[in-house]
Image 1: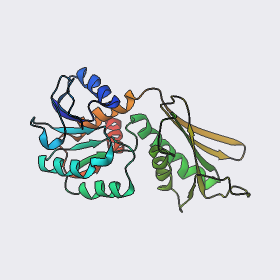
Image 2: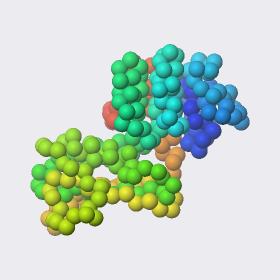
Image 3: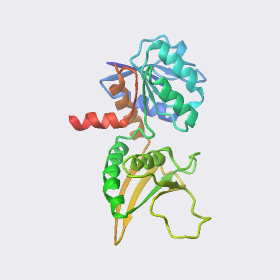
Image 4: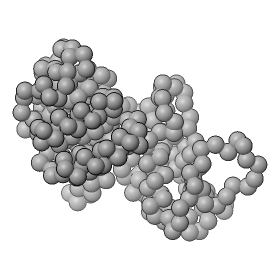
Length: 256
């Protein structure tokens, strides 16, 4: 049985993770972490990781990123692998995660969906071929009206994955309102839509002469992110220092 500490246990995603684990025979939540320390779960809840008394194999973090430094330090002391599911990390925090991963096992993906990891593979294959034939690349992402950041971290990660297979760098363009000129060849346009209760949609468009290829991922509930986090927690159990992502999980699943 894989023992999980769940940080952000009283939040919406934390409750979804709790429900998934409750119906999973391979995992159990032995402790939760919530800044208020509020109880109300089947497991004990603490204010921080340092206070957790239970033995655990991995931590899932679905909270805000503001306490990252303290969390990394406490996890290192406990030699506890972590699955970091929070969004909105600053560039400085991402660098902090990268440096910390040299001494402890950390898992982070811009999107915890297994589907997105497969989409990433598909668009890298497509981009490597189609950009050589003059296809333009556009990314359109759609999210609910409450989402604070734009474009989404997933859209930026998708653009980065495309950049990795290009023969030369493309510019990422977020606003064309001030331009009056034809679209340059070497750019990736990224558009953000905010409205209603859209959970999350990412569409990658390859537009060529007389043909268009579209690859799209739609999330219909936040449960897919919680499911991905539990899968990642299983994967991280027993791992050594390093920075892991959904790409490695997808590789493992493909080999089964």
